[in-house]
Amino acid sequence: QVQLVESGGGLVQAGGALRLSCAASGRAISNYAMGWFRQAPGKEREFVASISTASSNRNYVDSVKGRFTISRDNAKNTVYLQMNSLKPEDTAVYYCNMVLWPTQPRDHDSWGQGTQVTVSS
Figure 1: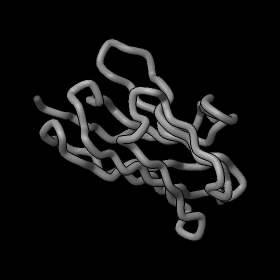
Figure 2 (figure 1 turned 180 degrees about the vertical axis):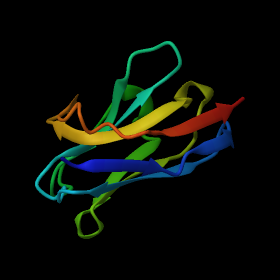
Figure 3 (figure 1 turned 135 degrees about the vertical axis):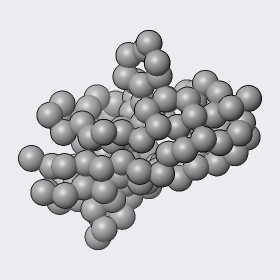
């Protein structure tokens, strides 16, 4: 089973930027599409972005297109999410997971602790 550890969250003002990291261990992620998901208070967890194994394809939820960029470094077994022009509605706990292409989490037993992103207005 893969272990996923998210980091890089924090408190930022609207318009600011953060870069999230997801470090995987226990299994190489190079054979898996990977994705980011988020859960805001009182809401269901939702898909944010996904990236194919060789980074040739990416998907984004409409609300983050043009602001967020997903990337991966298979040699480091790590996935990233660069978040620019942050908005208060981006406030949530962010998680990564392997993806059933293009938007569904693959392994519900592998959710990590997540990383909190809070955007103040």
